[in-house]
Amino acid sequence: MVGLFTAPDAASNDPDYQQADGLTWLLLAVSLIALVWRRRWPVPVAIVTGAACAGWALHGHIGELLNLPVIVALYTVAVLGDRRHTLWTGLVASLVSGAVALRVGRDVANPQGLPMLEMIWPLVPLLLGEVIRTRRQLMDEYAARAVRAEEEREREAARRVHEERLRIARELHDIVAHTVTAMTVQAGVALDALDTRPEVSRQAMRQVRDSGKEAVGELRTTVTVLRDHDRDSTAPAPGLAQLPELVGRFSDSGVDSVLRHDGPADGLSPMVELAAYRIVQEALTNVVKHSGARHAAVSVARHDDRLCVEIVDDGPPSQIGPPSEVEPPFRPATGGFGLVGMRERAAAVGGSVEYGPVSGGGFRVRASLPVVLPAEALRGGRP
Image 1 (cartoon, rainbow, N blue to C red):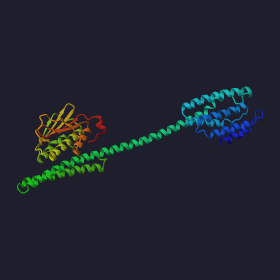
Image 2 (cartoon, helix red, strand yellow):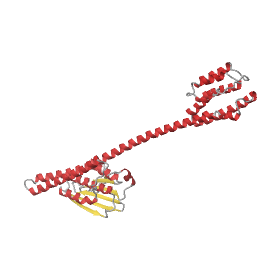
Image 3 (cartoon, rainbow, N blue to C red):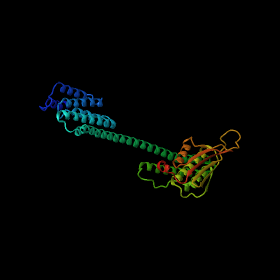
Image 4 (cartoon, rainbow, N blue to C red):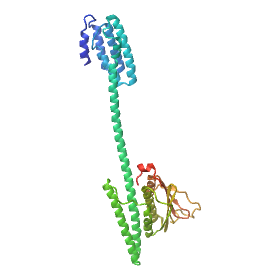
């Protein structure tokens, strides 16, 4: 395409100036052949085509389109290079073009134009190429940002799904484990007293019925929220006010449980109250299922900016031999779905859970929860 415009201009010239000869066509052929490799070696091609254009002018051949090959080469330098290459190329091209214009002007009355104008024209293709390259870079950056944003949205969606699955698992575990444990104990009591103490058996079966109704109600609430996530459940989440009822149900299950409050319990976040309730529920469930204890004590105390929840039972020692006089150190909750659930609930509100055996027998679970919910829990923690 460049040759179609440049060749006719090289073939004809003003009669007062140098006519096309072998050197003219040689310079044209070199320029056109060099343009074939302009994308691979843009700067060397710009040097070759620029030298050919200067050769035409110095040879005395004047034309309007003889500088078209160097224009294409300069444009390619700017498009495929960077700003540093563009600046240096523009500086050199302008100086060379001005020097050639001065030289030609003395010999042929400066037909190429004023030296200042000759210094400006090489900058035009460089400026155009710089604009095109910058626009392409912006478009590529916008596309990369869109890809990163999409990846971030996918990661955020996966994280939210994972958190929601953990939350559902905790809720189902708390509901099912607690209720089924109580129903199992009461069913055992009813079975043992069926023949000898029918009143006790009937009372135990009523407890089984009430526990089943409670579990069905909580499961129905959970399923309703899952089926219609835009509608919030109107049932209040359990909190410290429901602890006496919870402890009383475990007392009916064969473990004599007592509850002690110390300090005001008002002003707590519902998330903190729900976490405390579920921790007590899970700890008492473990007492009934695993410890073999007959008594359990639940303590809820508020100390400055912390809410301390402690559950202690009098189960048998967990080690063989005489009990140690030194109480073993607590360990962070790390094992079992119940202990993991307690740990996750405490961590969701910025607290922690520790557990360990008590010297002389028994087991203790201790949770420390913040009174004021931290900002991290407000952003990412969900009860």
